[in-house]
Length: 88
Image (cartoon, rainbow, N blue to C red; front, side, top):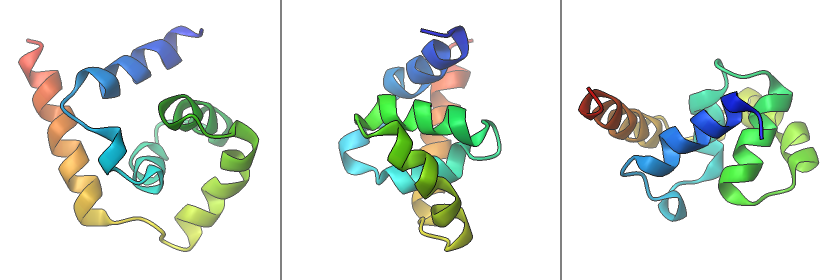
């Protein structure tokens, strides 16, 4: 597994985020500016056990049609920041 993927997965999985409660489309929006479309599809597929090829085709659709919840994205960001800050 690539180091970027391993560290990104650890960031999410070690935080207080419960992926069962989060729509993967919100995660696409949150990480969209940080990954290429292909890497984002790979990352989301690992988090949610979804087909990477389908996700690759869906990324543009999610972003273009605003199929995400900004309030939920903000809540996720707060959780991630808290975990990062707690690490020192």
